[in-house]
Image (cartoon, one colour):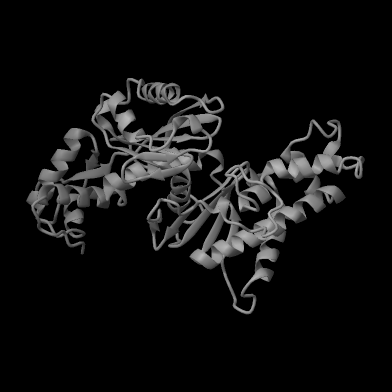
Length: 404
């Protein structure tokens, strides 16, 4: 039996509680619904009539009469098309946006190219244009849009919807009120949420991905940069200065052999960046001219996928490069595990394409580095959400806020 507290917002609380039950129940009658919640059938009927009027709930048919006879009861079902959530993610080179139904099914999407350090006013216009594109379908009623969430790269204040600083867009300056700017341009009065993209990405893993049954999760996105989203006891962690997840700037090479984009030396991000891998490969060309990394390309025509592919085929140079990267990843991830003790560490981004050699040897490395006398069962997995983790997490976050 679900207990619904009596309070000033009784009607709203009751409605939300019933909608959550319906969302997870399939088809159900009012009689069966009353067995799950502490409300009278009369109150339930008022709520069901409210939701059928606004389209959140639909009547799918009639149930069986009671033994005493009488009218057959209506059978109700949560309408996944009764509302819509919009998720967006700003990366270094694109704005990716989706609109979903109430079960996180993507109904439409749009990707727009962003220029290096593009001016904010230009990107804001692309955000508004993407919003208008996703809502132009006549079958989508704008009054049923329940919210918009947008993930930004950089240090982001979720409470104010403010981008404190974005390394990809330094021209934005500091303390950009992104939420406020978006709300000024969207005529619909909908909730708008802004957070670091990594937090929406880990939320996607928790709701839709490999961490559905996990309470403590870290999702690490690696590529040109390095950032993580952290969930502890089912709660997204942000920190006092919104710095939780900025693991790319953790110092892991005390000799400081690489200068990071932040200006520091020996940062985790700098040691495992794809730029560094490709630079090292080119430097080794004269020593390994027959490496399959360079097949048909030469040193200036290679990309990271050439290195990944060659390592899984046992190429000597590729294995040398990947072993170096595995070493640094092992140190960094071991530190993260000691900090957060997650049940699962999910790797997102370009390294999900690294294949079997990388993931298997990374697991071995981590198990050898620290506290090896204690059995640890942290899973290390590749994400299965591909490039949609950020936008799916953003849209799902809108839904979670609506139904909480």
